[in-house]
Length: 268
Image (cartoon, rainbow, N blue to C red):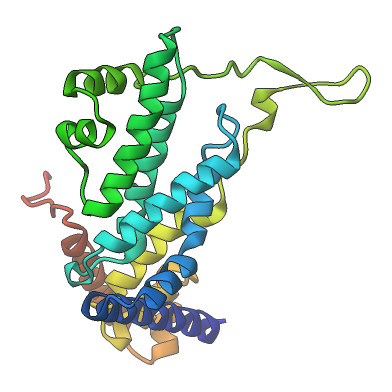
């Protein structure tokens, strides 16, 4: 059991190292085939995040397309030298694109058709310019591309902020006699792998600061839930040594996560 966990951790670290190496090569060569491979390898992140927004009035295929575009933005903007995993950078980037899509595609109040049509064009041009320029375009740049005034672009952008949510109590025809279903019944469950993205990233990053003995104690204590006594017997060291190393591990994790250490004497 312990060997399997160790092997799993080693594989995750190896995969993370390979991922970073690919991004380093991409930054140096700008190889389009390598860029396409990296995007394909990480499409699962876009799929997971898109699923979290299903049954909110927009089809899953559209959400996946938006999430995939966010993934492309993340790949092009990711800086491997910062030290964090790509998934930690890509997730907020993709979520931001999904939220903007929901903001831009629905209408709480009825607005003139000309503004609706202009709003759609503004959104498409904004995404297109962002991909071309590798940054968010200004209002003037969008206006110039569309051949309209900046005031018209601002009007369309403000109008696109209203979103019309579907009622969860709205019933749907199931096609079966005397059987109805509401939107609330269709809300998907959270994908288990979603939370694992950040969790695995944190564990891999922090484990890199531990030596071999610390890694084994960390694995035994927090993954296998073993007592300090059983760990001491396994490693042929004293329980006091296990306790001291565990405190050292906790201190390292606090420092890495920037969690302040409480100071001061305990009250008697």
